[in-house]
Image 1 (cartoon, rainbow, N blue to C red):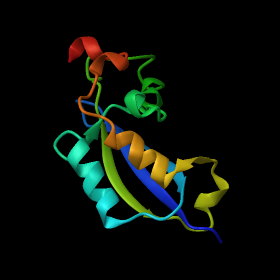
Image 2: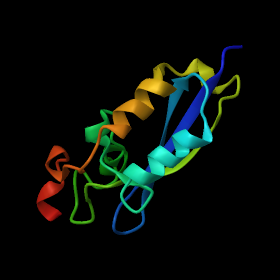
Image 3: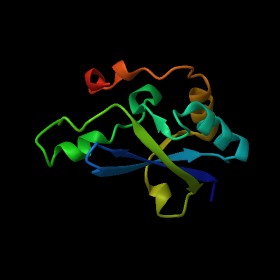
Length: 121
């Protein structure tokens, strides 16, 4: 089996309701890649999903509230990176590890206006 990595992340609204997501990335992951993530993510874990062009997870919570609420905000959280198992690789491959890390490495400032919740920011 080729090498695949799972990038796990979540959205936690202000009431602490959570939605989880994961991306399948093709390729190997180095400890220096984790250093890049932590150095670019706000406080080492927060990012704006739209800026990384990854699926935002807040919409998962909207089905319980018929849309956005005052608890919504712009930030998603990085959870972990792990090796994929056989069940994981049935999911579509989002990107390569290298392209994903390189994209994050280019970010100097997070742009909250890319999120539909930016007005509460």
